[in-house]
Amino acid sequence: MESRAFTVSLDKNPSISLKVIPGHFTTSHFHTTHYLDLDNLKTNTSVARDVARELALPYLASTLVDTIVCMEGTSVIGAYMAEELSQQGMSIINSGREIHVVTPISNIHRKLMFKGNLQQLIVDRNIIVLVSTISSGITLNSALECLSYYGGKPVGISTLFNACPQRHEQEIHSMFTNEDIPNYQTFKPNECPMCKKGRKLDAIIVHDGYIET
Image (cartoon, rainbow, N blue to C red):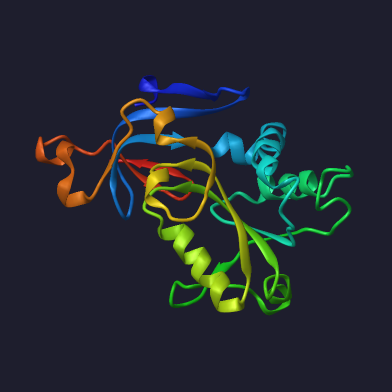
């Protein structure tokens, strides 16, 4: 399966790239034609810093930020993003401000929540939500629902990959989109054309990788 992999680079910064494997994959919510390996973007510190610079750009001059809420293992990027947003500069609105980087946890009902000592960083705070991917929108919606419960004020949404930018009412700043991946598609499991043709799954996509079937 790895032999089919190819690389997609960001046009304005080729040092930022992701590995893509075409095939037949499933998540807990949908089937898809490609697996996107975003691990290097999230764990390689030099690459994560470049990613953070790109993701910070839309907010530098106009958006007050108190907290970055990181989902799906994006905390390294979030920390560098906070550093970029608070750097010294005449045109940087958050220059010299303290920006916190936090990650929610799941309770026994699988709902997102923040520990008591972190809630003060959410209530009435200006928040950027940073997620790894937006496909079905379930992770993003859960994060926004959580922020609404605690009284946080979302001022931006950023993601490494957005599968369907046109589906979302909110403005989302995306590093890559489905248009960057040739023939990328997602399907509801009962509508998947690959399943209807009898093609077996190559792998199950999980939070931190995939499991071959």
